[in-house]
Amino acid sequence: MKILRRGDLARLTGCNLETIRYYETIGVMPEPPRSSKNYRVYDDSHVTRLRFVMRARELGFTLDEVRDLLAMVDGGQQTCGEVQALATAHLATVRTKIADLRRIEHVLSSTVAQCTGDDVPECPVIDALTEVA
Image (tube, rainbow, N blue to C red):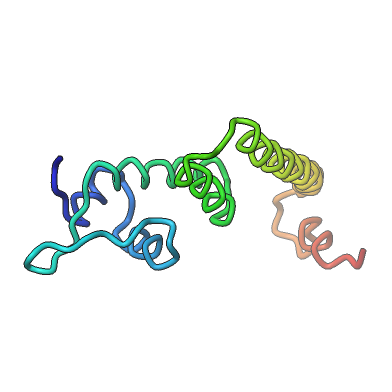
């Protein structure tokens, strides 16, 4: 087993040092043991866990959802069905956000298309932002 310091963990995973500290503070990453000189000591299990957390965050899982996934994994009692249920709920949230972003894109696209780009005081974008819905 290879012994790592926090900086090594950060380099191996591409995770910011402050983010690692934060994840430890909120319990997503376990508090690492300490060396005889009181340095935090990490190993491959920390690398694996941090990569899991980072990948889940890249996929848009909230920290609470990440905690739920980790609790399933840590307990060793997870079933694919439980993980699927959590992932399915997250997928529904992602799809809702995508639909919202498409609506936003449509409104912005049509509004920007109305702009002439001229040096005139009238601006369709500003007008659209000041409209009362």
